[in-house]
Image (cartoon, rainbow, N blue to C red; front, side, top):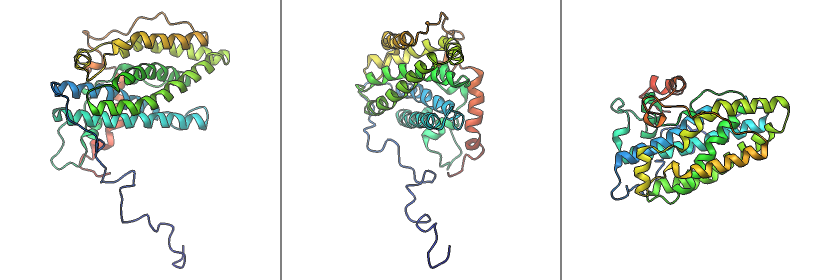
Length: 305
């Protein structure tokens, strides 16, 4: 463009760069929130609990982001991308809370690395340090698969976050209050599509039932109680997922009933030596997912983005 009219890039270079999605001046995600650890709370337990909730959101977000440009139509493509972004935002806050509660959970990086703690937790932990349930890590299938997985995940997470709003930890309470609104939409989106596919064509119903059958054994882990969850629930900091099992079961039962789909007769996927995703015991799929998700950050640990 000529000098008479200026440049279309005028105003984009220099000055305040805080509005950019990529830059070096990110604000502390917990700025303005009381990060004081409630009296009597074990800081390491709190950090691990935040990793459990944060890793669930992070890995589910990564799987959903893989659907970008692959959904049946543009509207659903955007919906899935927005759901992934909601979960990524929750993950960032929860991982930041974990680091603030116990810096010992953050991987060691080269001296002078500009990587924020929450990014270090996302990009520089090995698979056995992640605490997510195995449901969120298994590879994507077809569209029915993403609908079923999101329904199972969001139903349990919504019930948990609704109770977590009463946490004595101000960060968890704030994350939960915001997350309830987001997860309510996620569950409703998945529920509507579940009904649509169940009552659509023979092929859509076949695919839905197949996805439900494949993922059902992973659902019980969402409402199983880990000792850390039990301990923090007793201290009124966290929520025992076992306490929401009946509610989750009732909601899923309603969706199945209105859709005319039978509840799968499948046993829960067993752990290994009693250990599950909450203990860092995962499927091979998580290692492959992390290899792709972490490759750029690990190649440039001193990089500024």
